[in-house]
Length: 170
Image (cartoon, rainbow, N blue to C red; front, side):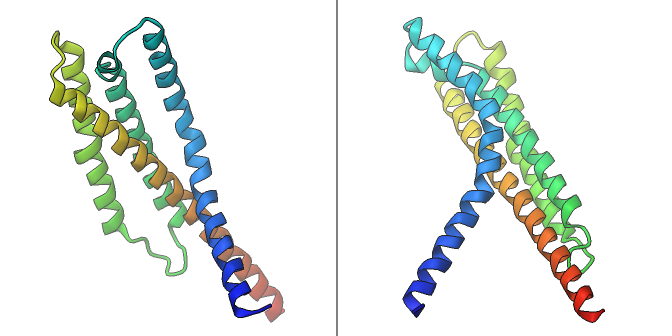
């Protein structure tokens, strides 16, 4: 096999690895997305405008759920990654990610949810902000889910290498 063919095989494997990291979190996110799609379809059937669809407080609710689930995924990655290779966890990075998810994601999503629920007049800036938070929540969830999958695969690889090395030494 030539160098070009080896590079193509390597690139294909990297693409497959990236896809496998995202498939699980995407499947999980469908449980948040499908109800929003159903609500949107019903609103379209009722001849609601696009503005009415995106001004629904369900988007803020979904953003809060996604940010919360992303937090759980990050903590799960922390637990799984404990004792990998060095026996130490990069706690400062995990604390930063968790703090960002709470301060930049979860809290603003809940504030926007409250504003959208109590407001009689839907203020455009809040509608756009809730949609932005929804998209950020979805991306955060997908990223953190991929992180967990990566850490689990790394743990499994290290365990297999340890077993293989122990068999060689016997």
